[in-house]
Amino acid sequence: NSDLKLYAIDPWTRLDGFSDYGEGVLQRSFKHATERLSSYNCEIMRKTSMDALEDFEDNSLDFVYLDANHDFKNVVMDICEWIKKVRVGGILSGHDFTNSTPQVIKAVIDFCKNNRINQIKNQDEDFWILK
Image (cartoon, rainbow, N blue to C red; front, top):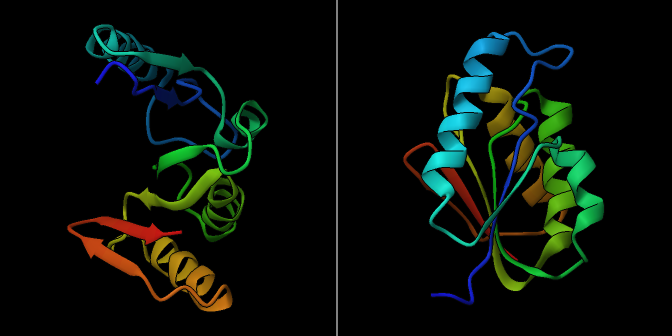
């Protein structure tokens, strides 16, 4: 569908507190993502999730998929801020909803409880919240 627009947001560089991958791996990942997404209507944004928020109006996105920092504080911040960008009827989803990342599970469940959201689904390692 030519009307669809994809935004790929990731700094693709090492950040304080992030030591999972070295700079070389991150740069190769950026190159790979650029190549794989080149045939789509995709804007690649080399930013953190928090820095990219200002580029989107509230209630403007149909779908947001999060796979960023996995500590409780950052997951909660991502969900709280990015849910504002999702239109009513849209979906906020994310990765690593698994026992190996219990802080992600806790952040998602706490957010849903505190905001009286009952519609949370878990598919494999992904969570889905309908706004």
